[in-house]
Amino acid sequence: MSVWFVTGAARGLGAEIVTAALAAGHQVVGAARHPEAVTARFPDAGDRLLSVALNVTDEAAAHAAAAAAVGAFGRIDVLVNNAGRGLLGAVEELPDDAVRAVYETNVFGTLTVLRAVLPTMRAQRSGHVVTISSIGGFTGSPGWGVYNSTKFALEGLSEALAREAAPLGIGVTIVEPGYFRTDFLDGSSLHVGAGTIDDYAGGPVGATRQRAADVNHAQPGDPAKAAAAIVAVVDSPEPPLRIQLGRDSFDAIAAKLAFVAKEQAAWRDVSLSTDHDDVG
Image (tube, rainbow, N blue to C red; front, side, top):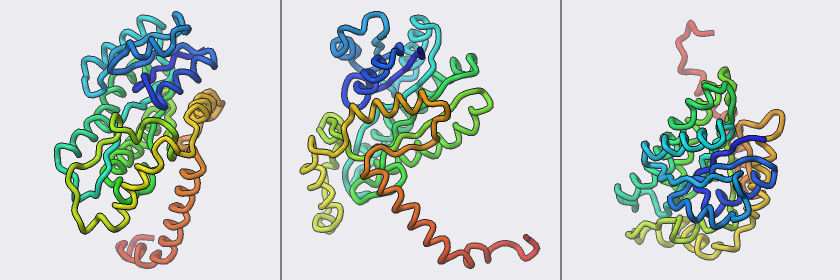
């Protein structure tokens, strides 16, 4: 039995991860802006669930939530950085305040929670960090550029963290979901740029906006299955650094890897030509 600390636990994928972790016999700290919503969602969890208040952009709240977790269960074995928000719009369209807001939650909020929880894992010399990234954390899509950039940032820092923390007994797994049938495309999670530029409306950005509206609550992925997969991956003997969830994510990332390999091969000579002549 492990102690899971899940951010964004009141709804969506976060709530499903709480469900799956409890079903697997684990103890869970469900962190959310409104912890009473977590408690209400899991009335039968008893003392295996601790609901804590957490706005991930609040450093003091993150440390208080981590302390409450250790006070209740004695340790934190798995941290799931799930809390996040979306932002839809062409890169040029999005104003600075909207861009900064999504970075505050997705990037700086994740760092805030990491700084609060990692000291406990270091003291234990054990633990596992799960970063909920996205299909858009590995491949960029029109209309999602700023959101993509936050998830690219998370993947870069998670790769580095994996190498930094491995000698301390702490593992890292980056989860890259595709489109899952949650409320991510609702106004509660997805923010759409207020201003639009006509030049982008008839192109791929306009198509992305329309698809986001059309696919909402009809996404192909099952969040309950995704959550069960995440718990199974973390509980496995050798969790991967990176895993895609959903056929759409798997196929898109495989296609990008093939594209990068093809482009590298085509431009190999130019790439290698820039070394000093005395370099092997």
